[in-house]
Image (cartoon, rainbow, N blue to C red; front, top):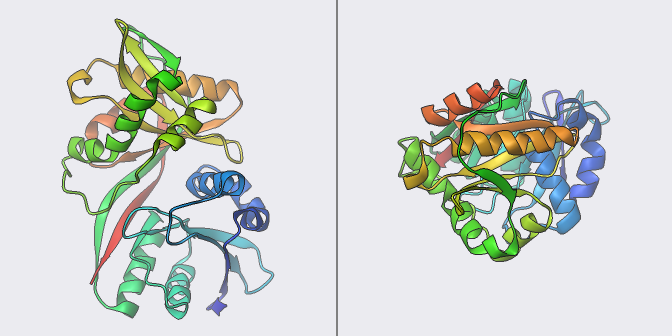
Length: 298
């Protein structure tokens, strides 16, 4: 399927997608970490409970050309937005038209700017309606880790004894993050996690808890590295425990562990959340690219 000078290949098998896009994903591993992580985990564990489950490569110069971008639709929450990498204007519009020809309304578009905005606007033109920005985000990569001093407590790996609190906090993360950013209403749904998901994260050592005075006061989770890049998140402190440095200390500890494994470390922030943006800058994270999640409004 071709539009202008771009062609689009859609995959329902994440392993085949990873093989097809390996060169691109390796070369741009940080900015496409979400796509690489989701595809890698789906290839290993499957992807259940989502109405759409596909990945796509964008090639330059028609069939057989180099992969110059990727997209996916795997979000389990409504309106099940796409996620797109950086794309040229022509490729972004072409992707919107390719979906229109598939008879698939995108619902929303998340990802790198300006590509995500262009895909959303072209989709709105084709299907009717308008575009609303649900959330503006920023991708950061750790440059030089600066470990905070004087934070009380210590970090430790979560165990099965912590499943209940981990499940509660991970599922509350989206609401709490929007509230802290002054966007409590939200325009997107939140991903819901179950006990099996939390137990799997614990088995893989991907949840770090911070304890102070024998009490668990904070959670930082992270993904397994994909193409050498690990993404930190969610990062959650209950409202009555904030302002004491727990998040800074825990993210620093999780980042240190990942660096020891040879991974590059990245994370996302809400641009409206001044607190988190300031915290991560002080830890040594540097901004890479701005992104946005758009909703298509009928």
